[in-house]
View 1: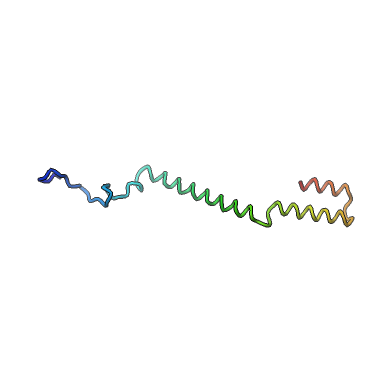
View 2: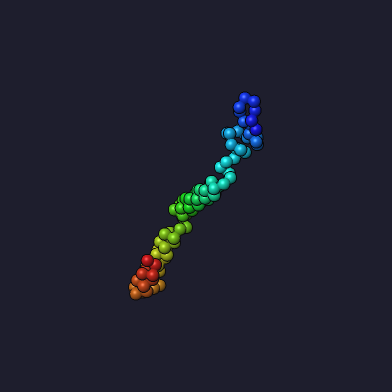
Length: 94
């Protein structure tokens, strides 16, 4: 629509920023990229949380193998197993 001053009025009302609806990023091809980056951010955050818990867990695999080695050493020292059995089981723990 043209007015007498030569300025045209918009056919639809705008909600700021001079764009129709003011929500240009939430429509069209940008929406897929925004979801992708959000999902990637959540995956990275989850991996960091998992890594922190894995490194600070006192019952982790490294502690379990050292406990098994200690028990094996104690059984050998008490004479419950012979040297051949001790070496076989020690190799199995490594």
